[in-house]
Image (cartoon, rainbow, N blue to C red; front, side, top):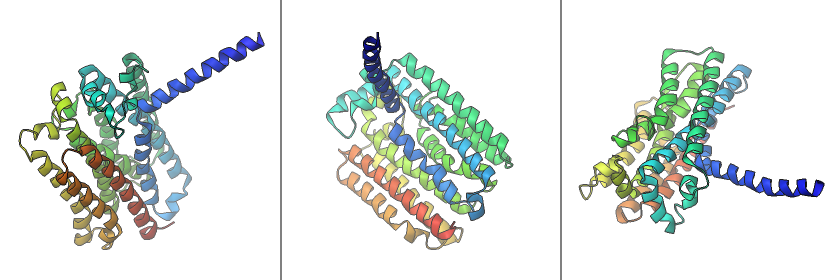
Length: 326
């Protein structure tokens, strides 16, 4: 009896672990971790006394717990839509030849998980996120209208990227992504302090542009598949002209850099902010210049975008440590 039990457990454990890994890939766990850099930045932007304040830390903890659910829902329901309309099959199956975008990232395509399982998981994740964010709102003393609006829109709009209203199918996906990524930093700071300093707004926008620029080059790679599925990203809408999408990405690159330069020149943030973020600026320009030279390799530009994003985060953390301190 003992031998049989041990044998059955030995068989069951790999199955459980395999399922856990499948769900981790479904929610793009490595990218979710990148989004968790947002509340860390928000914490470093707090005044020194608030960094160790018990109520403030509990508020941030509640937000972080809810953030997991919201992000899991966004990633999961995006894949559910992608498998249903065929866009993921078009964009990933043929692209599996490239290690820059391995098929194993899509467990619905590989058959490791069913659509029903994923959809149920996405709904439960969203409920989890909403519950913890409600707890954060009820716990904090800072319940100003703008904070409730930003947090509420983040909860409701982020999942509408490719599910529900499917805003990315109507040319609004880029705006949703920019707002959502920025709000993942602005909302917890607002809940913790009730304020929105110019520096935190700038840092939120930089975080948003970091994620937007990754998606922008990814969407460039997916033009044919998205077009066939009816998803009207800006890359799809500008693909009718030879340089339309190149110009669009150039405008985004310029806007990203202006978010750093204009507030510094206007005196809203420390004058030395552009110098602190110079590595990120150089890498962003390198990303775009490389794409212009080789438009046949948007996934290379996408990978460079990840580097730019993480470099920006390091620079922003350094700014907060130097300017605000502990």
